[in-house]
Length: 70
Image (cartoon, rainbow, N blue to C red):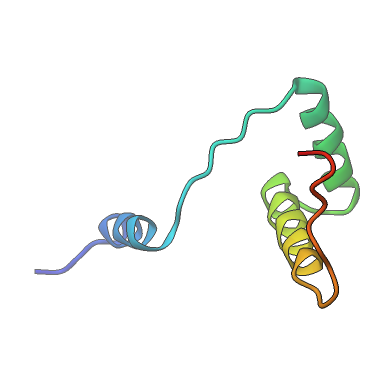
């Protein structure tokens, strides 16, 4: 029995991806969208890059988390 492309993709997504809902104010979204588009990025790509760069910076040697604003 052959697995079709749709079934394969659904299985792949189920096993390898996690959707993360994000609510934000419309103005912040519009600003982010304009910024991302200005850099030739999608919003999804921009968010992923921003998260990765923040994690890299937070994990850099000598860095400590900023807990002043928590």
